[in-house]
Length: 294
Image (cartoon, rainbow, N blue to C red; front, side):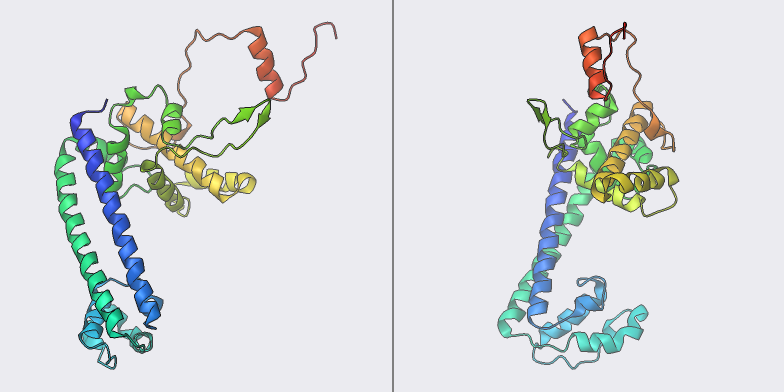
């Protein structure tokens, strides 16, 4: 069982994940209201709830019937060249009902944002004793956010003795193919549904790192796998590779290096199998068994 602090950190991080999901839902809801009202800010700005966009929305909501105001004082200097496009994007009609709904959504989003910021302060305070482990994780490819590192610590802990090998950890995290075989017929080999909090993070990091050329050992492996297995299976393999590296980093207390993912667990020297098991393994690999006299 993980220490009490790790369990508390896990609860807080999972709550942060829920708040992030709520914020995404509210942002989508706000975008839907704008689309219904023919306000196409999302076609011009990268974030509908960014600073400039918020000021434009506040101005619109002051008087929904008048969208012919001067935009220039409301936007950042880097967006001055987009003024004609912004003026066209807000040339819509917002009904009083939609304006009221937009105000509620925007207020709720800002409240969630404030609560998330307060929660993150608690998380950072609770994660202080694990700074050494967090610094190690931040050396891994695509792990540049402190909260990504905290997610790893909160989900798998810092004591890798809980997992006999990296393969056990990958299986626990839902990154290993399932073994679904009946009457000699293999069925689905999709990854399991386990690891619903850490697996999305690892997949996100995998998608990020394969686009960069800073880590050729990762990108080249992805490109080879994608040719044979397709993008989705290749990304899962890269996520499994990253988790294997994290396992070795925490177990050996060393930063990331390009060889970590190649490290395999040392097999015990006293492993034994029967002749029947060896024959089955050979048949599984496609060998045809011949007698010694043939």
